[in-house]
Length: 312
Image 1 (cartoon, helix red, strand yellow):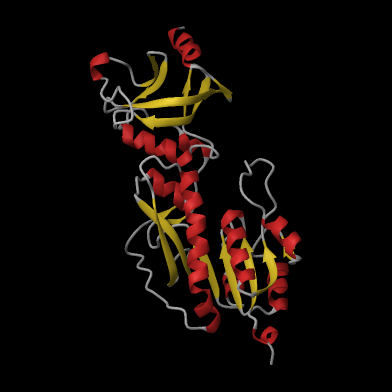
Image 2 (cartoon, one colour):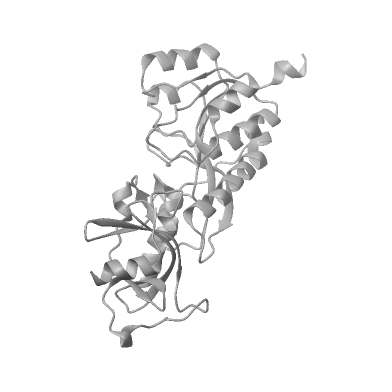
């Protein structure tokens, strides 16, 4: 028996940077990836991440892009390759029970389970002001993010990190979490830790409309919203006079990185304002966001231009 006879065969469901990096880990470890199931990129989406399809083409790996993970055709394709293991790395569809029954399946989730189960875990973590997150490899069950934990890797969320910056850390954490446990996963000795669903919480998907700013909220909450949806995500926005203003870059004022920490004495109304030729967002607790880049209906706008509009 040679080494090729001992290789494990896998089917990978994947997308996004986490999919690309984790697929590369499997290939580096000598796993035979017999099939990749991924998504076609959407023309309506801002594609800022790497392509699973491109990697498959480079490596000569067969791939399919089914519209529905529950299709009988996909089930037969997966069964035909007779995988020893299956992995889901940021694949966007839930896998039905029939697929999960084909072989032991493991999912990479972008949080420290059981925290932030469900969709968009990095964005939700930043929105809720979490100071730490990470990546978790866990057994897949029909119930999402509920299986036993196999491996975790933690990363910090710094006070001014955007979700995009945190996602960059999480994709490295995912790569490390998989790399660290993969030998024991392949030989059947990987640990199974309890995933306590009485802790943490489950969160749904997010839409661009969820970026609407409520200026009545405390500045820290508004800042967390900006960080959670800052570009390349759609951005935190406010509508004024029929114009949509989207914050591109901002910092929380009054935290040692600038002036205007408390502006109650200035008597400024809530929302966008211009002070000393700088754009600010006044929040419900009297604190402000210092906005260094703002767009109006998609075009950059200066403090001078905004001041004119606000005075009209």
